[in-house]
Every structure is written in structure tokens, then in C-alpha cells.
Amino acid sequence: DLQIVLVAVLALCAAAFVPIDSAEGKFKMIYAFRGRPDGAVPLEPLIRKAQTLYGTTARGGAHNDGTIFKLAPDGTESVLYSFSGSDGIGPNGLIVDRAGNFYGTAEYGGTDDDGTVFKLAPDGTLATLYTFTGGSDGADPEGVIADKVGNLYGTTQVGGAYNVGMVFKLAPDGALTTLYSFTGGSDGRYPAAGLIMDRAGNFYSTTQQGGASNYGNVFKLRPDGTLTTLYSFKGGTDGEFPLAGLVMDGDKNLYGTTNLGGIGNFGTVFKVTQRGEETVLHSFTGGDGRSPQGGVIMDKGGNLYGTAAGGGDHDVGVMYELSVDGAFSVLHSFDGKDGGAPNGSLIMGYRGKLYGTARLYGRHLGGTVFSLLRHDLAAASEDER
Image (cartoon, rainbow, N blue to C red; front, side, top):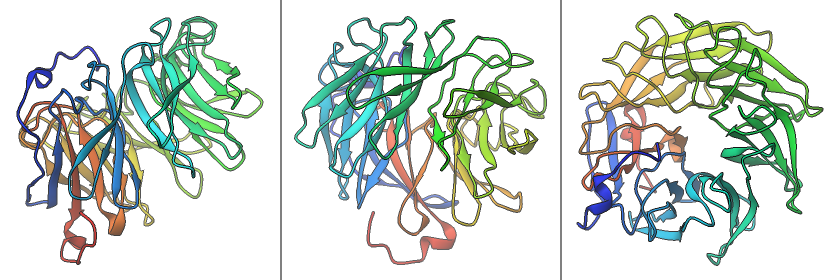
């Protein structure tokens, strides 16, 4: 994604807050990135505090190495930090603690250009917590989660003992521990997504390749470092190449997407149980979307929501809903003007409103931030954008 050449970087027009209505629901393009100085190519999920959104862009900013941004309720964007290379290139996701400190990873940059883990204080001061070297400690980190005592956990896409990725723990004192190094065989290789953690401290995610048929895995990693492959994709109708992370329901079933595979080879939405049983919940056909790169989120009723990076009415991506009864609905087809190629997972806000990012296009071609209020909620009064 970071290799995409963006003409948005050269765009000089002012960004705007542009509401757009759609037949599928009340859709708003909240912000269109310009490249410099406000950022370009938003790839990762947003986070939300009250009515304010925060996120990262992989490019743009003062040095074209990416930004951390803030989006106020009135659509005003502020760059909280611009990366400059030595502190990271291509930030890919944020979490926030109660004190308002942001934590995340940069996929590249740092001393050895193998990525960093960073902390951004509320006053805008950035501290590099760890710089990856590309060896046994990994390279190209894919985001972090935190436990109650401040340890950070994440994956690297490459590096580790076999140079095909690993799972790490970063203690508050900066000490990094390898929890698991993938071997590239049946256990998978190249984890391209972050982790989720259950109450027992087990971690779950996906590898985009490897496994029994080399089409990727869903895995569980216990706190003692024991890895279990819950499911290996076969490369046919069951899906191929999961690029995103997972979401878990109350019964510990896991849900995610594959970039390819399915009936038409346009990707799938799947469910995997703790016993390793996989169910394809939806196979994309192209018209309803193709090549999902982000994962899904789940509401309290068990309905799933996500994006596909291509397909739809204009072949630049869709937002979709997959209801608990299996009904699939396209909530919005992107047309390029309102963004395109959405590949980060959505987040859910007040009254079920969905927020997300599209990495390309928009008014200034640098990607967009958008929201959608579903039809069943669109008539309700709103006290936020």
C-alpha cells in the first residue's frame, strides 16, 4: 500500500466537509485528504473519543511519511503529528489509553527502516518505544493492542526466527519479547493483521499465507506461546489469503474476511469456531463487492459490517451489512468522488452510525473519511455528525 504513487500529494486545493446522501443510507463524506500537509492514504481503522475521530495516514504530512490526525465534529482536520522517517514511515493504526496517550506502529522507518512502535502524548510529543531491526525481533509491524498493565502486543509481517513474521510483546520498560516466530509451514507465514485477545489472555489473528494449502490460516496463540492453527484455508470456495484481523462473539466464534476465494474468487466473509469449523457466510460476486482487505465489526445483535476494496456499482468498493440471518446488503457503493478502495475496518459510533476510511480518490485524490447512518436509524435525530 505504501508504494502507491499518489497524485493527491501534489493537490493544493482546500479540503471540504461534503455531505453526500445515498439510496442505501445517509452517507457523508466527512473529509477529503489533500496529501500535503494534511495526509494521504488512510489505511487503518479510526478510533473515536466522544464526537472526535482520530486516525493515521500512510502518506502525506510535512515529510510525506504519514500522519496522525484528529477530525473534529465540524469536519475540521488537524495533524497531530507528521512522521519524518527516523521516527517511522507509514503509521498503521492507533489505540489510546485513559490519559489520552496514543500508541501505534509504523510499518517502515526507524533506524533500520524496519518499523517502529511509538507513543504520542497529548501535548504532541512522540516517543519511539521500539525500533525493529529486521532480524529475530521482526520487521514491518502491523499494529498493537494493550493489556491492563501497559504491555503492548502485536505482529510483524516479516522477520522473526524464520523471516516470515512473528508475534511480540513490548513491556512498558521497552523490552521486547518474541512470543512466537512463524516457521512458514503449516503454522502460516506473513501475518498481515493485528491481534485480538480474549479474557483468558489468548491471542487470535490470521496469516495471509502458509498453512496446509498455503492460502493462509486462522490461529490461536496461548499465553505460554503455544500456537494452534484453528483453520487452514484450502484456496477454493472456503477462501484465500486473509489480510485482516478477526472479531469474536460471545461464544468465542471468530469472524473475518479473505481477500480472494469463494464461489467467484472475489473474496469471502467467514466464521471459524474454536473447534476449527469454518463456514462461509458470504461469497462476493463483484457486483456486491470484491477483494475485502479490511475485517468486519459486529453490533450487539450479531450483524456484521465491513468494506470491500473493489466492486460495486463503480468498481471502487462498497460498504456492506451481513445480518445475523445471513441476508447481505450493500449499504453504499463508492463512486470515486466520495472515496474509493476502502480497506480498513469500520468502527461503530452513536446509534449504530458507521465510520471508516477510503484510501484513494475523493475530491483531492488522497482518500476520505466517511460515515453512514443506516436507513433504520436515519430518521432518528442526531446529536453528532
